[in-house]
Image 1 (cartoon, each protein chain N blue to C red):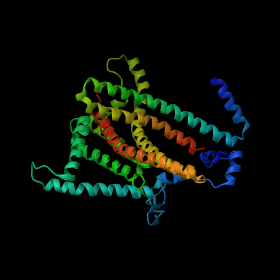
Image 2: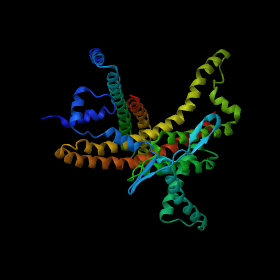
Image 3: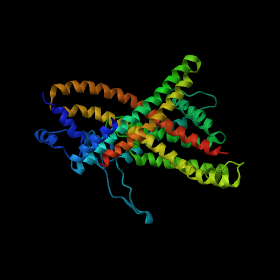
Image 4: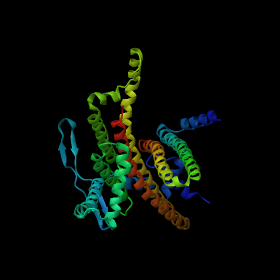
Length: 311
Length: 95
């Protein structure tokens, strides 16, 4: 019995690299399925939207000259469109709820969807924002809540048919992490004053002799500096990697069916098993979407709290 | 044993042309890295699971708190494991 699926799988896993001679013979003999190409096509950003009724080509080349920073192409791509849809969903969900909350009489409990959303918002404000940031926490609650629901909707849009998750793009998560970084550092500066803020970087314990202080400053300053930079970096990579890994797994399980497309019987069995596994992984992915959005918002508020209380 | 494994890999790499060797060796490196990473993540999350089960057994009233905390810690450890996966992905994409 020849190992046709095996060598085809091997040829595909080698992707676009040079083919070993044995695999090249088989690849010449039958059509292979490009699993790597299919997965990459669904994960990366594109200049066209694939919808049920056809492909929509998005505009390109809206160049903006930023002077010394070069030229930037601000044309909408697939992930930008998905971000706009997620933002629109957030507004659609919360503007009516806010209006209803404003119009409702004092002391009366909300019902239905308004009640559920209010429970989530209050949970965030009390358990996440107020607990971690301490005094003056209510000023940060809008940003943290926006962060949570925006990331949540972006993650969930990746799980619907013909959708994709914009948070699977490192640029999107990096932008969110940079915004959180600016929030953390500026709130630290506002709370501690410039001198106190610099004290968080150039730190030496108070009771040390001058030589000891100098040595501690030299050693600790790069460490503190790097610490400030690694926190948003970790936020960005955590969110990006979780979303990308989950979608890669689902797409690979689905694509595995087509890898066996030349061997019909095996393909039938693989199709059943693969569909069941992919469904289970998608259920897990819904949970991961909620969890990662919560972790991003919670860690941002934890870092804000840490720098405001850094004495 | 490890020494002879490395020698074997190097000889095999020497027998191929440089481009194939680079591609194959980087895949091997990525594979080993991913395996070790998942071992680390598995051990870490397993320990959290054990500690959580023990905590809930000692104090069933605290079950909800322990559950929430353990899910958060597991997600943070998984984040660290996924750093390594991202870099392994870079190995494959940058040939």
